[in-house]
Image (cartoon, rainbow, N blue to C red; front, top):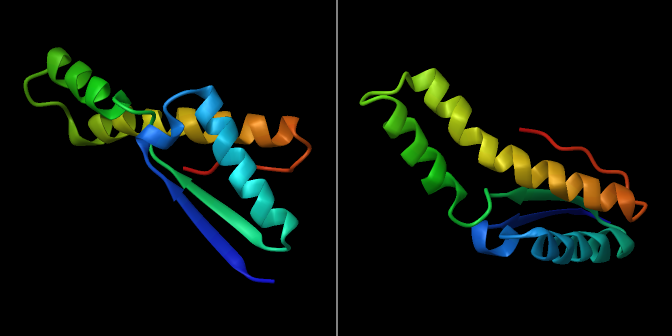
Length: 96
């Protein structure tokens, strides 16, 4: 069939149970014959927590390091989704 791109925000991936729900949605599309790309945000509240950490560390954080820190929120959710999908027998890889 075709390519399906699914996007889920922080509330949709707020915990592991919700990430498993996202995995189920991706699997249904795969079973329907589609190639699937899933785009995830950080878990609910995580980006704000990381921003607060950066500004508690420095008044004007270095841009490169700030971006690196903030991206860790997405890295967590995409890695967890890949772990869940692989555990369910579906080959998955996280990309940032």
